[in-house]
Image (cartoon, rainbow, N blue to C red; front, side, top):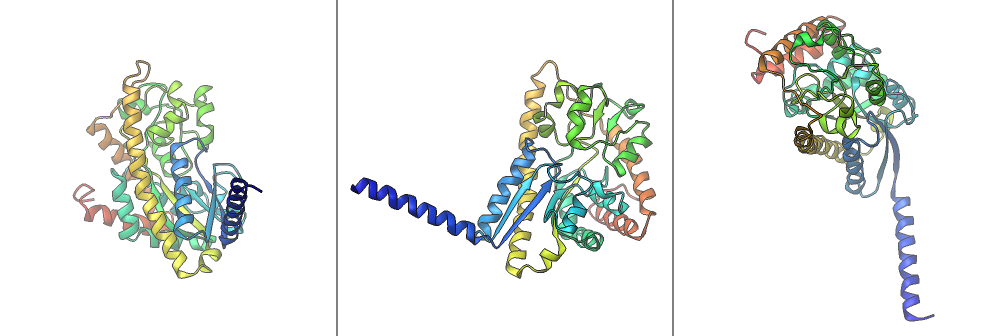
Length: 344
């Protein structure tokens, strides 16, 4: 055997040994499902963060992230996490409004948040995470951390310059509060999963979509059929519930719990920052495209939307004790930061 051949053989053996040790090092191997398709920028950011989580835990935790509908439908991930079909999910809790309307309020208090960092402060420092776990732990899941997106855009096939333009608009909206608010504005919402938005716009099943952020929408090709995106967003900023099966969570050592909480909190802030940059880059590209016409609603129209949304908050607050708790907590936080009109 030559010296070169010997070195190559030794290198290959070392690589194989390291790969074997790495595979053996994962004490916990989990599968999470997201609420996005695999091609969306936000999904790729989450995947990159899961690699960081694995590094932060020294390889003790390995998490595979699957796209929407990979194992179960988006409304079924809570049950799948509880039963152990999935170990966790990263998804909008509004999908579970049918099980408890408090999920709809926590998942997307539509019109409340004009800045994603206000929402993250509420969840981390204003009691939001504790309330969420009171809601979700009886369903067999534990919230590790809350994330969110920048305010969502609305891709539309026709111009929307005022609240009157929502009259009769067939707009995709998920089950929950945002669906009801669009109804309140006179629209005709259609409950579709995000994975079906592209086809529905292409075939004219819907006129517009409460979908996701501008860069995600563009990555999915929605502006080819919906060339009037509303941006900056003004209405919807869904929560991302990063949750784990409660029995698994309860059995974790404290050091891993702390690493997961710290890592996913960092992911939440990084996700907002990265998507904002991507949204601005996408906006510049769309503004240079003669076939696409971004629309920025006036402050007066935004205020009208929020007034309709606040009426819906109050209606939802009376549905059960937990919805009232969410309403009281969120409104108190917003008031304390001067984010609601005086007298609310």
